[in-house]
Length: 288
Ligand code: DDH
Image (cartoon, rainbow, N blue to C red; front, side, top):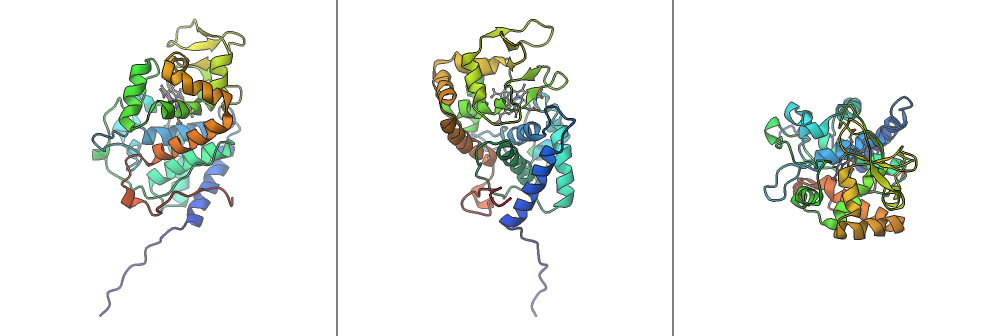
């Protein structure tokens, strides 16, 4: 009298690699979008899905993919991320066994790696949650604020000053959109290639307040084609932040190494260790 057990599909690393490969195709299939890549907006989705974590209550983070639910999708900081979620919906249809949290964080890994950034250790195990898991608005950083706010936000996730600065280097990629955040423009001249140019430009260019009707932001005096948010500029003004920002401007390899470990940790915030299927994170993309 053996009970019939339904055989459940147990995906292997090779199955996740197929998802990765599909995301990589989508990233490049963007000739009419922004700077020709969906990489930056997918990276931003992975970050905003994870950065809601609160270490004191254990709430938030990437586990439940709560940005699927309207209250969180409508948080001001998430404006524009429907583009990224919509792209991943296509992948989800093809690979219906993957959880949204795994899909979105894997897309962040794929984005960084496919835009020539460092390898990001990643492993699956997130589960889809419910609307009750949605976190309150205000857990992501506000670009108009200063160093105390940046510390409040990132210390709450469990990061230190060095990790805050390393993570901020993601702004080498992508751009601000007036219809999303209200800000305007890219941070670097190569917004689809992961480099330490963000840090180099912070120190090498002269940054002046842009005179326009939009929110307060800086522009480079020379070409007026690049931008910095008030929170970006703070990395050159605060003594502790400045030390790390300078180190990353001088040493791309150090930036890649520190970004990789901080971002890998960010993507696992809020996920109970026992949920992960592998005891150590994997390196994806190697056999692509
Ligand atoms: Fe960011 N970010 N970010 N950011 N971010 C914006 C765009 C992008 C802040 C504000 C903004 C990180 C940290 C901070 C990316 C990745 C990361 C925009 C513009 C604003 C505003 C959105 C728009 O108009 O489309 C602030 C404030 C902080 C902070 O730390 C204080 C971090 C840690 C990351 C990361 O990935 C680890 C990326 C990529 C973009 C470009 C998106 C795009 O569509 O292009």
